Length: 462
Image (cartoon, rainbow, N blue to C red; front, side, top):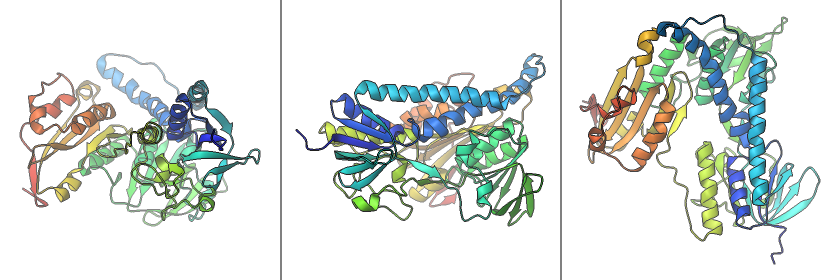
């Protein structure tokens, strides 16, 4: 009989933590999982899931407008923010219940407490002060929104956490940041009728995405009425006598808004976790350093998900958890595969992408072919919208493999999921060309672009 209280102790009840705890418990292991807030983690409670619900809500005003072009007469419409919040909260509570049920059914012990390391095999539960031991410990506490505390007036601002729980919908908002969280919330608030400004220090939004879809989305957002201020930062936020906020910016002078949201990235949530006490190594951002099998430098301690700052995506944390189970409990060493991860930005229009951008591919390969289509989607022909869909294929000329696909348009995220399988399988441009199109769809463009728009050889466009 083991001398430890548990075979596995998991710190953090998010996607990676819950999956590892549930699978280990279902194998008969003695498992406990501690969560200080709510089971489900960032994604379910205050991230991907409520955000996507907000995205749906924000799209309806355009749907109502588009309906007229298809013969519908739509009456007066009104939006109730409090009703949306209540419905969202109800759905999140339902999902949290499913997470709890799954853990309970598997036989895991749920502990509602913050847990901190006290050694390589021990954890203190702050709610009770009790110390427990475990043969293995998994740290899956995720990340937290960067509150940018160096900004004067940061205490008057919100992050994405608070955006899901605002008492009232603001009349105006300034969002600082140019990543996917900033861009998605800019579209959400604008779609709900809020006067929206996005301010970003870079030259173009979404710095890690393909240049064409970045520019295309920027243009689409501005055409909708979202103000985008690039190469600028907020220097100070102050509260006005009327209760609003005043912002001093570096390039654009003074701005005013009801609400300021800081979407300036997320940091590994490792502060005060007891990592130093247990001897767990971290990098300069506070992320836990792990090897190819999610092991830390302490043999009994593992780390999964955003806390490792490898790839900050929910499915990645789940995948890493499954690999941990295979490696540690099934005698099947399995390293997480972080290559060719499909992803989406739920902007309006959406971005779906997998593989290398044109810029990355041009640096990596001697010659690439770029296939690009830009067109007005069929739905826009009767609705009268001027928005464009962009599709790009990046092909390595050497072996004809498709090494990147980038889409801006309706349902781009759905397409990216299927394209992720295609690229993972190593399909070539010839495979795309042999595939029959589904007509009429936007995605048929992916298999009907037979001639490259241009080539890039040794970094030079030809």
